[in-house]
Length: 198
Image (cartoon, rainbow, N blue to C red; front, side, top):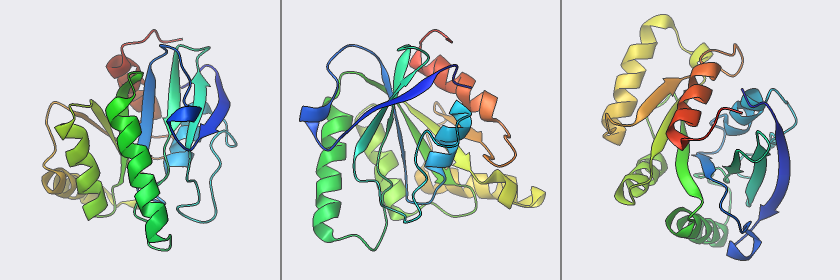
């Protein structure tokens, strides 16, 4: 769990990015995957990342200082929400491609997928994009508490097959509600970021 976490700023484009050399982990996932809840659970702060009532509401990159500038967490807008305009989808695509391909601070992407469902085309495209650009990925399967025990392995297999999951990447199944594997996901994040734990 994060020892310290504080919101710094939001940015719509490169001009709003923070200029320093602090490593960043970017959290991505489709709308309603439980990204904000997962961030809040890691931080043990229900209000850190706003859990929007309307999926796709967050259209900015939100920067958070973690563990007294040990690293930064960057919360990206949820993707794949049908009720936003095409122009907003284009803006989102440009912003994300710019950040993911040119941001030198970026050391890791934490990609969240819903364990209950087969990955969407947007999920597949995001993962393919990350792999094509040699960006390290920590995959988090959310909503573990919503699955029956006999569904877990089957659903994980389907997700990995659909994404053509790289076995060198780490996959952690979590429940924000029951706090299952939250420490394991945090430990994996710290290990992959190669930063001091605290």
